[in-house]
Amino acid sequence: METLLAFGAALLTLRLAGLVAGRWRTRRPAPGLLAWSAGLGAYALGTAALAWGAAAGWDERAFRAYYLFGGLLTAPLLGAGSLLATGRRAAGPAILVYSGLAVGIVLGVPIEGEIAGSDIPHAQDHLDLFPARVVAIAANVAGTIALVGVALATLRRRPLGNALLLAGFVLAAVGSAVSGLGVAGTSAFVAVAALLLYAGSSVRS
Image (cartoon, rainbow, N blue to C red):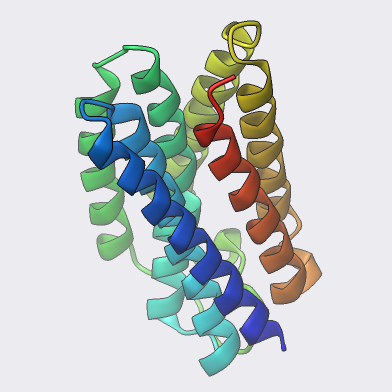
C-alpha cells in the first residue's frame, strides 16, 4: 500500500509538471513556468525514488536519486521559477550552474554506512556535512527565501495564486521534515503539496 501511494504521488506530480511545461510552450518566453515545471519534475522524481526504496528496498542508487531530486533540486528550482517570473533573468544561468553542481555532488560524494531496508534513509547518517549537506542546506534556504520573498512581495497583485504557492511550499517542506511518518505519510504530503504548487503557478489572480 505504501508503495502504491508513493508511485501515485510521483505520477500525479509528474503529470502536473507536464501541464506546467505545456503552458510554458504556449506562452514563450515564460522562463518562470519552465523552472516551476522543472521543480515539480524534480519533486516527482524524488517521490519516484521514494517509491523505489519502498518497493525494492533502499540502496545507494535509490538514495542518491532521492537526495538529488528531493534534497538538492526541488526548492532551488521552484525559487528560481519565482524569480524568473518577476523578470530576474540572472536566476536562469544561476540555476543551471547550480543544477550541474548538484548532479556532480550526488554522483561524486561517498556514501557512509549501509543503506538497506524500507525506512527512508536520513542524510546525516550517510553523507558528510561538506559538501553534500552544506550545499543542500544553503540551496534550500536560498530557494525558500526566493519563493516566499517573491510571493509576499507580490501578494497584493496576485493574492490567490501566491497564497496557494506558499501553502504548497510549506507542505512540501513539512513533508520533508517529517519523514518519520514513513512512506505513506510523506507521499500524502507530496501529493497535496504538488496540487497546491500547481494551482499556485496556474492562477493568475
